[in-house]
Amino acid sequence: MSKVVIANNQLKFRTRLFKSQSLAQGFGKFLEGNGKFSEIRIAESNRSAGKFYVEFFSSNPETLNRMTDELQKQRIERSREEGKDYKFRYIAGGLWRIHNPKSGMTYNVSLIECECKDWIGRCKPLSLICKHQAWLAEHILQEEDSASV
Image 1 (cartoon, helix red, strand yellow):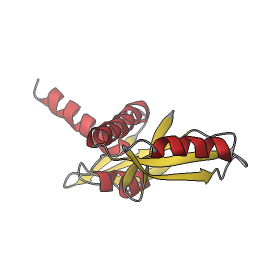
Image 2 (image 1 turned 180 degrees about the horizontal axis):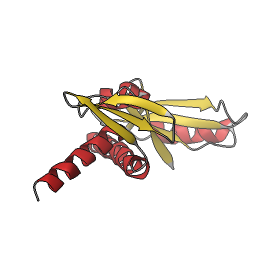
Image 3 (image 1 turned 135 degrees about the vertical axis):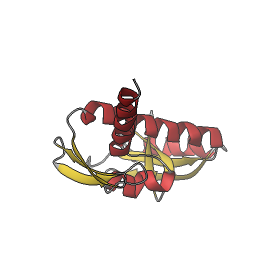
Image 4 (image 1 turned 45 degrees about the horizontal axis):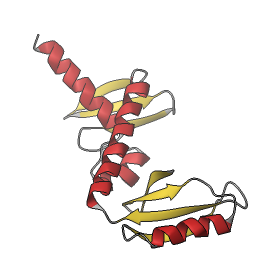
């Protein structure tokens, strides 16, 4: 099983940890034999000494689309879980200030951009929205729906 990570503005897979370098290398060789994967790299974990993982890219556009969709769904789900606790205030021109009590962070956010590290470092390069933008979009839609009733 592998998870999707973002590195150098690209989506890639990272496996769970292998107990030895030879097991990770074996999996890496298996991937090399499959033309759907590229830039296969074996690395030692910084957190678990003596354990290794494999990183690799998919060259399949459908897989990349699925990966992007999954990352977006995760952010939307987190916005729904954490958003109910957000403290927010409208500033002007579509800009809101949102405070997340869970993280203790406060950000200026609009439907176009956000100041959070996730949006700047991961979402923006991949044209995703962060959890703050997802919450804002859903909140604005709820307000509009309430006003039109």
